[in-house]
Image (cartoon, rainbow, N blue to C red; front, side, top):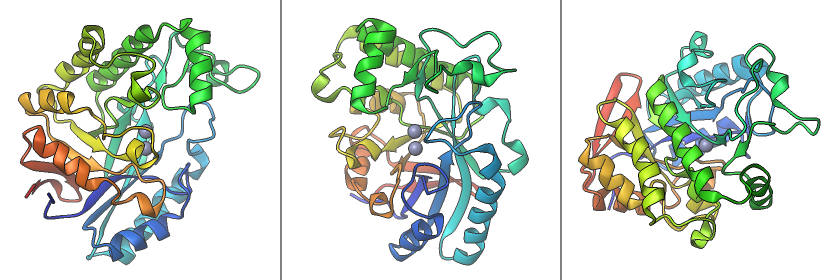
Length: 302
Ligand SMILES: [Zn+2]
Ligand SMILES: [Zn+2]
C-alpha cells in the first residue's frame, strides 16, 4: 500500500513541543523523498501552557518556515501552518487571530474539555482561566499524561468518563461548525488515554452517538480529516485516529482525508504511514486530499 507522493501536514518542531529544529525536520523530509511538508506548531493560546508557542515567537516561526521553504524549493514544498486549538467561548481557528501571518493552512484541533465552562471574563482577561498552580480552571486536555488525566477525570467528572466523552465530541462538533481551518486534527483523540478501553467502551451506543455528532457536522464542509499516526508512534494506541468505523462513516459522507504523522521528531515522519494508508483503503478511500501552495491536490492511493 502506498500513495504516489510522500506528504505530511502535521509537523511540530522546537518552536513548540517538538524535539528538533524545523531545519532538521525539513532536511530529513527532503532526504526521505517527501514532496510536501507542512509545519503546524501548536498556536499560541490566550493563556500560557508548556506545549504551545508564545505569541511573541510567531514572527520568528513564520519567517523560519518561509526561509526553509525557499532553500528546499522546488524538491520539497514547505508550508507554514499552525495547529490551532478550539475552546468553546474562548478561542478557535475561526477567530482569525493569526490571519495577519497569511498561513498556507491551518489544522483545527480540540484538546480541551471544559466541564466547568470558561470564566465570564476570560476573553478580556485570559489569566482568569488559570488557577494558582497555572493549570486551567475550566477543564483539561484529553491527551495529557495518564496520571494527570486520571486525576482530572476524578476531579472534574467524578469518574464519569462517558460525560467526558460527550463533552469532548460536543467540543469537536463545535470546532467543525465554527470552521476556519483546513484539516481536522486527530478526530478521536479521546481514545489516547483509553488503552484497552479501560476508561470507556468505544463500542457502546453512547460513545458512537457522541462521535456521530461530529461526523454529521463534517458533511458538506470542505474540511479534510487527517488519519493521524501520532499516538501509534508514541505507543498510546495500536491504530491511527480516527477508528476504522468512523473513517467508513466519513467516506459515506464524502469527507476528504489526508495522512499525517503528527511528528514531534524526524523519526516520526514515516512511522506507521503504511498502517494509515491501509486503514484509508479499508474504509473505501481511493485518494488523499492535501493543501498545497496552488490549492488542493488529490493523491491517488495505489
Ligand atoms: Zn494535537
Ligand atoms: Zn499535533
